[in-house]
Length: 162
Image (cartoon, rainbow, N blue to C red):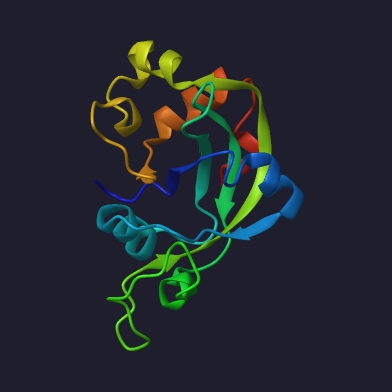
């Protein structure tokens, strides 16, 4: 899939919610420990890329707002910290395996867009999130999916598109 400049990032709201990001304004997106998600993050994200912020393992799991990539990919320091939940003993300063970016808050949707609704929507049927077994925490979004999710979330995406 070609780089679209639009992503879906998942986070469990009990760990880090869109409300947390709004309060912080910018955060370091650490803890990605899946190689496919890491490769999207490390090799394809660019500063300014748009993000649909998605709450997973929530009631309901749902797209809840927008953010953007605010830094170039960089090594995730938690991989080298034995006190971190994201410590990786196979990583070393010379061989870092995991990467991260800074993420900046843009807005909340006026209404959250539940996963169950997205799965029923024919315009989103081929989106990675709605596919059975595709559980990546970072995944590319097609522009038409992004626009439709924004519409369902009752926001105008035009100010965020370049």
